Image 1: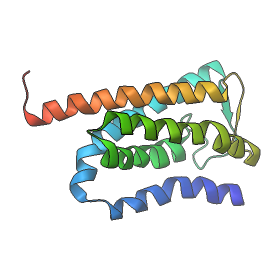
Image 2: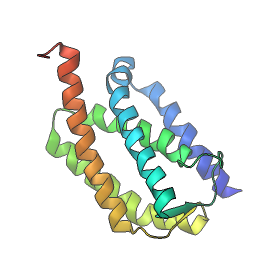
Image 3: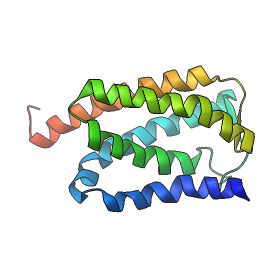
Length: 154
C-alpha cells in the first residue's frame, strides 16, 4: 500500500506545487519540461527494448514509460529547476548534479527496495550520467527556445 502512495505522490504532489509558482514561469518553462519528458520517454522505450530495467509497479502498467515519474516529478521538477536557475548555467548544472546524484543513488536504491522497478542492464552510474547529459541538452534547448520567443534571427 505504501508503494502506491509513493507512486501517486510522485505524480500528484509535483503538479500541486505549481500553484505556488508564478503563472508566467510555468508558461515560460513548460516547453523545456515537455522536451525533457520526451527525452526520458525515449529513454524508457530504449530501456524496455534493451532490458535496462523492469517496471514492477505503476498506475498505468500498459504504458512502457514510467508515467508517474516522467510526467510528474521529472516534468514539474524541470520547471522548478529552470525557474530558480535559468540564466546561470553553473548553478543550473550544480543543482542538476546534486539532484541527479540523489535520484541515481539513494532514491533509486529505495525505489528498487519498494519493488517499484528493478535495474537489470543499467547501473546507478548510467542513470546519473544520462540524466546529466539530458540536463545539458535541455538547457541548450531552453536557450534556443528563448531566442525563438524573442523573435531572433531565423
